[in-house]
Every structure is written in C-alpha cells, then in structure tokens.
Length: 607
Image 1 (tube, rainbow, N blue to C red):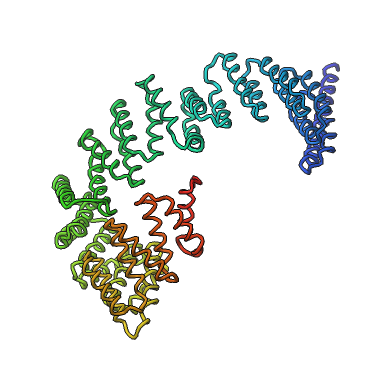
Image 2 (cartoon, helix red, strand yellow):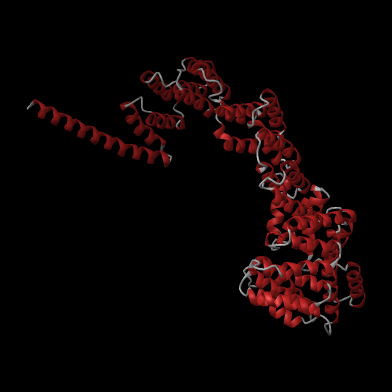
C-alpha cells in the first residue's frame, strides 16, 4: 500500500508541476505580446510575477529588467537586480547590469565599483567568462570586455582561447593591428576557422586602413619565427590574390610547392585565377614554372603548354603591345607543340589557335585555311568541335574573298546543327554574309528570326545588325551608301583596315547627310582601341557624343570612353564622370546596370 501511495503522490506532483508550467508558459506569451506591442507597464507587471517566482531564471529576469529600463524606473531596476544577484551570485554578468543601471542614475563611481567587482568575482568557467564579456560589449565597455577575456585566459590556463572573440572587440574599437593579431592567434589555435577569419579580414581591414599592409607585416613576422610552417605563407598568398598581385602570390606559392614537394596543382590553380583576372604575365610565369620545373612527368605539363600558347595569343587579341618578332616566335612555338604532340583530336584546340594566329596577326590566310582543312579531316572529330572548325574555316575563306566557299560551310553547319547554338551561329554568319554582299532585305529576314536565339550573344548581334539595316536602308534614294558601308565592314572583317577607312571616308564625302557618320566613327574607334591607339579612339567617340547627341550610339560611345579612362588610362575621376552621365542622361540604356556597378566600385562602395 505504501508503494502505491508513494506512486500516487509522485504522479500528482508531476501533474501539478506540469499544470503550473503550462500556466507560466501561457502567461509568458501574454507578457511577450505586451512587450512587443510597446505596452511596457503591463509587460513589467506581468514579467515581475514570473521573475519573482524564480529569480535565477535568466529570460524573465532579462525581460523584466528591459521593461523597467524602458519605463526609466531605475530605482526599481536597481532593487530588482540586487535581489537577483543574491539569488544567483555566480551570474557575474548581473553586476554589469547593475553598473549600467547606476550609470543611468548618474552614479558613475558606484557603477565602476560594480564593473570591477564583476571582473574580480569571475570564476574559471568558459561559459561565465564569455557571458560577462558579452555583457560588457553590449554596453560598449570594450576595455572591460577585453580585461575579462585576458583574466579568463589566465584562469583557464589556455593562451589565446578567447582570441577570436577578442578580435571582434578590437574590430569594434577599430584597432586594426590588435584585431589582426588576435585573428592570427585564433587561426593558430583553430585552423578550421580560416574561412570565417578570412571573411572578416577581407571586409574590415580595407575599411580601417585602406590596405592589407598590416596583415602582410604580421604574416612576414610570424613566418620568420616559424620558417617551416605553411599556414602563414598560404594566408599571404591569399592576400596577394586579393590585391591582384599574382606575381608576389607566385613567389610564395613556388616556395610552398617546393617545401611540400607538390605536383604543381597549387601553381596551376593560381595560373587559372590570374587568367580570370586577365593578369596574363603572371599566368605565363605560372605555366612556365610548371613546364620547366615540373617537367613532362607532371600531370599539368601538356595543359600548361597549351594554356601558355593560348595566353600569349589572348594577349595579342586583347591588344597588348607586341613586335613582329614576338609574333613570329609564338608561331614557332605553335609549330613545335604540334610537332611534339601531333595533329589529332587532342590538339584540335591548338590547331584552331594556330590558324587564328596566322590569319589575324601574320595575315597568312592560305596557311590558316590549310591548318583548318587538316583539322576538319581528322577522323572521329567531336560533332561540336567539327561544326566550330567549319565556321572558323568559313571565316577564313571570307577573309580571303572566297564568299561562296564560306557560305557553303556556314550552310553545312546550319543543316547539321539546326537547333543548336552553333547552328544559329552559322545562320547568323550567312545572314551577315548577305549583308556584306548588299542583299539587305534577305539578310534582315534571317536576322529577325535569330532575334529569338537561345544564345544571348547571337540574339544581341542579330538585333544590332537588323536595327542598323532598318535604320539606314531607306534614308536615301537607293542602297548605294549602305553598300559602301557594308563593303567597308567586310574589309574590316578581313583586317584590311586602310582600305576600309578609305572607303568609309569616301562614304562621308559622298553621302554627308545620310546618317551613317556615327557608325563610321564607332567602327573606326573600335579598330583604334584594338590597336591601342586610345587618343584616336577617344577623339572619334567624342565626335559621336557631340555631333550625334540623339543617335542610338551615344550611350555606347560614352561607355567605351569610360572603359578606356578606367582600364587603360587609369583616370578614375573621368571614368566616374562618364559612367554617371550614362546614369543621369540614359537611364533606359542597356549599359545602365553595368555603368552603375562600375561607378559604385570606383567610388569605393565595395560593390
């Protein structure tokens, strides 16, 4: 019977406790509702009942205190906190709440006593140390928070255990040197925090100091103390990449590659990043290191040789200064590569690049055609690669004046790849060919179909040419002026720039009022940009903005001018002025989004 009676009493007690708990939970929801609605008097009375039932519990205590402070009932808050401290003397953060309340009552000396007392009574508990430091940080008592963490490290006998949290406080104090030091200490203690620490350093160091010099200084100092370590050199590589200083990044990466006896993966990845940022010189140094230092046994050897050639060709295409001898040397390197690795599916990309070099930089169209014909003849060639090769071969035929051969190849690709992007590209090429020949109406019919292309690039190009034809075709009594321009356009495509310019100049003389002037200026400006003759390009672009203010190329001209000033001439102020003009005067332009992004970046918004 006693056993059954005890069981009944226990069950009854549990039911009572649950019932009381449910009642308190319902009341807490009501209190919160008052608090969220800004009814702090009602919320205070409500939370007071819950807090006085359990002064140890933090949630009711904290909410009741917030209500009293909102009501500026500081005397009541003072009394409440003191009772709460007696109920839970181990919760030292409550001394901070008391000190903060006393400060609001203008009792500065008494407040300081409470702050000092909180630190003095700090137990050797990681949770309590963090809670007290957080309480100090919440009221902007950063020095006390740091003092708490420093004492906490001594109590726990663990150096740098709170370095990560201390870094956050130094960040709030805008102390870049100490913030950096603490983050590096935290990283040494726990390397798994690398990503978070990198994010903080990347975000806050430039804001505080305008550079990463402080971080680099501390990294070099630590590397001298630990010359065999890899953590700090890897972080230094990351910093150099942020600064787009890929050559310095390569210096550190080579040291790591040798120290760790790696297979070149680190250097190859760095080369790829350099290419993405158009840091061609650095990328070339990376590829050369793999080729010379790692040799043929390296997994990345062949790909590095391929990308080295492609990078040098890209530099020519981008208009970097070069001599005839440098181009001839590159030609020799392409020939050597194909001699070493043969002409096959594996080297198809190199063959295409070699043909481009011959056509566009050595003006050897017959040789480029021969290379592409050899490529197309390779058996079992990938379907897409074959189609792309035929399009390029068609381009070379067009450059040599063999229009029928070019059209035949474009038509083959159009038929073989009907609904694929390459098929649409071939169709666009054929439409452009009709435009060059002066068959404007048929060209426009084909271009109108291509406006809905799945490829945004093809669609945009088709729209541009179609609009151009529509705008200019019937502005005079015939199509003579348009034929002049189309013939000049073909000469530009064939890299016969002097002949193209001569024909365009004749057009402006013979048809001064036709309206093709801005198109002539734009076409010439693009060639001058390609030749890196920026002064001549700017002169023509300015003419477009002054003589054709209402023309459809004005915003385009402004954007190109801004790009030249930003990227080539490094004139940040002038570039911002031009980007801003696009935003103010051409809000509907397709260049608006990019102009806004670049303007904000130049202004320093961190976009």
